[in-house]
Amino acid sequence: MTTPARSLSPGVREISLNADGVTLSGLLAEPGHTPARAAVVALHGGGMNAGYFDGQAHPQLSLLTLGARLGYTVLALDRPGYRDSAAQLPEGQGLVAQATSLHTALREFVSRYETGAGLFLLAHSYGGKVALTAAADPAGRDLLGLDISGCGHRYAAETYGLPAPAGQGHRTKNWGPLRLYPPDTFRTSGSLVGLVPARERAEAARWPRLFSVIAPHIRIPVRLTFAEYEGWWRHDEETLADLAAHLSAAPRVLLDHQPDAGHNISLGWAARAYHLRALAFLEACLVSREAAAVPQPAR
Image (cartoon, rainbow, N blue to C red; front, side, top):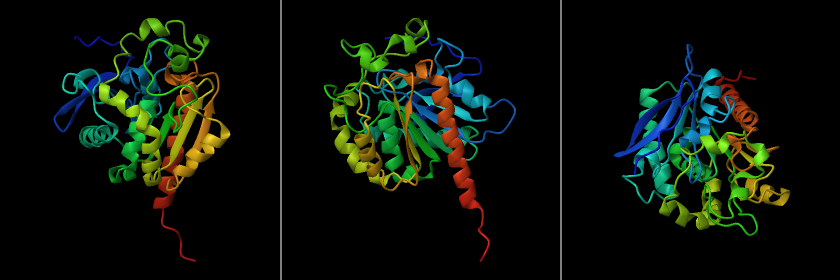
């Protein structure tokens, strides 16, 4: 099966990274004439690919171009089982294996590209599960922080499993009201969607239990955003309080709501607002790290 070509925003290019013999493709944008302050690593959701973070329906959608303009290197990675790795991993990988592949690929990434103060994970939906799993690993303790949209720990009533890009009955949960998206969204998103690998889909039901195991091991700042029209996850006050309580070792946990947005926030009109909030959280993580590194005067 031929991988569909994808349109890219100016300044965005395709790259590949080696994850212990598995080739992971991705999209990269770098600052023009200044050293990168840090690097944002973006992980897409189930049934999408890295192009989710470089939406072509409107120039303001792309996280990659926005991040590069603000001085960050931005890598949007095609997760294991998607795009270039699909032939090697036709059934994909489970969460723990994906987290291991991510850490392996990022070691090569750091050796080849300018990453400034370090790596910051920004993830959507199933990519958020991968990011949380990676952050719970000892190798994740050096990450600057973690920003996730469209991923919680309790599935909403009468929804279960894994979002599919265009499954029967799933359109409302995946997208919300269509007025939230630019008119060309569905014309330009053909190269963004695809099949969800079998292992990924099979593991979705185990997520609530797995989250309760890994969450206490996450020791970096975490921000989670839920769209106003999020249909896959419970995000009522009681549920979010329980979610935050599980992240007991994280030095900072922020829970946010994005108005005028559906599950696929980064493809909608609210994309720029969400991306700016996420990058503001990265700025706060950088400030905290810099302040912690300054020797305190003796009293």
